[in-house]
Length: 598
Image (tube, rainbow, N blue to C red; front, side, top):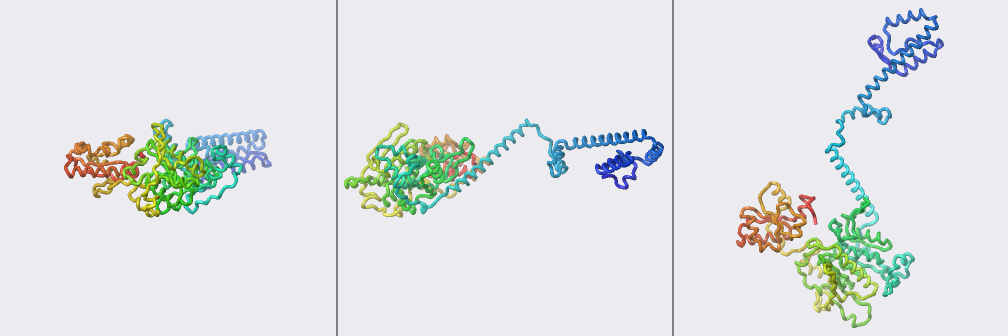
């Protein structure tokens, strides 16, 4: 904005007038009455001697019009040339210092351009685009962005699900009214069933729409049972399952789902199975009603749930629940459609079904219930599960489909219900074997005239040692001393310290081939007693033996076998024996989450 007073007295100072000062001075000089240029409009401040000479020259040529005109033109040209030169030098300096940010400054994109420029000047020099580290970091950033997007979609999806679907209680189970007439949309939806000429027709459809079915289990068997019952138009379906959807379920439990190929994250992984199944059923047939319960079937709730439905479908995966449902159906007077699948085989029957005929002879032929067929619970058989022994995906689906058919037959009264037969399916030979069920056992604990189970408390008390839905009850599995159990964290520390030892994996060979810890030796539990000498050679009287399995149960049995052999001196060379508590499941949860879980 011009010089200060001190600066104007200093003849060494040179400067450019501010645009405002130049405008006022130049305008007053050029457009004044005299029309001449004022000598103060210059590109720099003149020295006193220069000023005196210019004043004398002006006086001399004042009356010469030509001289005055030339002088004015020259002064304007001189001023303009000097202004352009200075502007050019300033612009060049600005470009050299702040060229990456000039556009921001000129365009006014920054609230404080100079501060932004100073900040950006501190940034380190750019790295070449083809640098390996840069490429790797960019890939990682892209993956993280994708993961963030997936998590946001998953959160939104769960919020949407929870906003429309929710878990309920037994009090939410409705009583179904009798349907008197089919609506036009129902006729259209179920038209292919209405056209059946095997006794189903309109009457059968109205019976389905008026019925209520309880399905216990939303796993491999329950998946097809639920979908087909929902599609067929069962009026109300209650699905009971306390478990949550895992990746290992999806090869057979087709009612649940992972993210689809279009990138829309509608996965139900991590969702309660009952709620996931309810969502799938309503997506398939929104005209029915569903109740989702995340409870475990117990002696306290089984009879209440059973009594609120017309038919019960057993699609569970453990013997304790099977016995509880059977006993509740006997006490509550409800038909039970029972099915199971394991490995490559499955079986199906119907219990406690009363034919609709009034013939007294028919009613006398009461078929065997589940306890009549299996009066004694074999603990070793009860410990078998899909997670231990595997299952071929379509097998439970086939059993579930057949159960859905039997449930529809029970509700509508069509066909020959399998209440007097037991069907066994062998998928490897594609064979269905039907055997006639024995009659009701005269001393059955629940359905005979001398029954000892007269309440659900009696039922629950009789099943204390039977495997339930959460833990496989192995006999005497807690018979180890406290110092023989080692946590996965402690064992991991031992590995990291490099202490010599023997890691004995006692899982079956097919499980060991799926995944194993480095350095482990596979010796299945059922072969252990015949190969004690091999364990002694591995230990060689110096190395401790650590036993490992999937959940810590079989390894506990192995420790007891080895310890007994060591104590009675039937095996030489065994130094000491320890059980890795929790097995590989605990290893995944507490040590290495990247280790395969199955």
